[in-house]
Length: 359
Ligand code: FE
Ligand code: MN
Image (tube, rainbow, N blue to C red; front, side, top):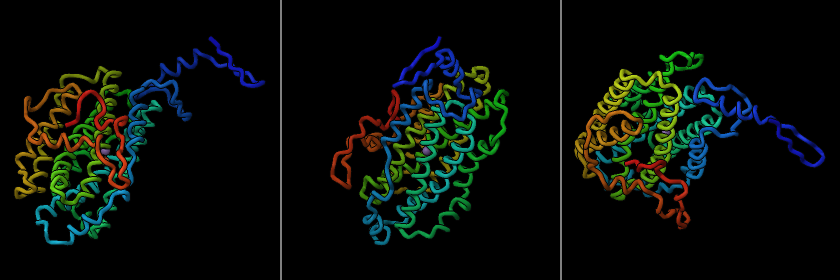
């Protein structure tokens, strides 16, 4: 069927069948390859919607005042374990944000074929740049030696192990992967699961909780604010990876075997174990009124939310969230904008995309 458009004195004839074929050829992987970035017609509407939500949440680190944090860092009112949490936060995330951004660009965005998926993944990678930049801003504001930071992710074994856990699934998928091979499809699905649900979805949450706990006590409020914005972004990244994973599996059901499901649950188990070891390094003594034990239970709770979110069985069914206040803190929809005194309306850009709240 042909459709004619007349604009001024020019007439264009467009082929409806071709447009429908282009739509049908859109796939998560092994779809039509085109340099033309043909976003329309949208097949993965959720990806475009999420892109717009993420864009509406844009923030810049320099907008956040650091004066009070600097005074606290240099002063004597805070104890060593509180400072240690900040050091671990800066040390871990300085490496982690970069690792995520690199994987999104060089593995996931490279291998998916539908343009609207590439669009939202590009935004995801950009947000990791903002997060990396926010850490640079924290490091320079507090006057921390950058080499000290690098030393942390090279020399603290629990940070090294967390990083190795994710990078090994990234290195095996660089370029020229035959994605018609079910084994490679599984590798990509596992990669998206590891980054979205295990790393961003679970292994980020120990420190997020500790830093937001400090902020709740008016300690390092600038850093806390940046982490709160980062957490809001991460909620969208987790959701993006969750939906991408579900669509990838849905279009390639031959990979969704009991053995593969079991493998993913085991992978999450490993992620949780690594995070618990890391939490014990961050909180060697009970601090910020919270114990490492509570944080470990919190990780069990979060991990099960991630597993069930992609149709996998929970590891600890019925485990309770020990920090109900954290769910509250994370909801920044109603929050007052601190630098201009205007109320920031985030309601369009929901913190937690989807039907469930994230904590
Ligand atoms: Fe991030
Ligand atoms: Mn992220």
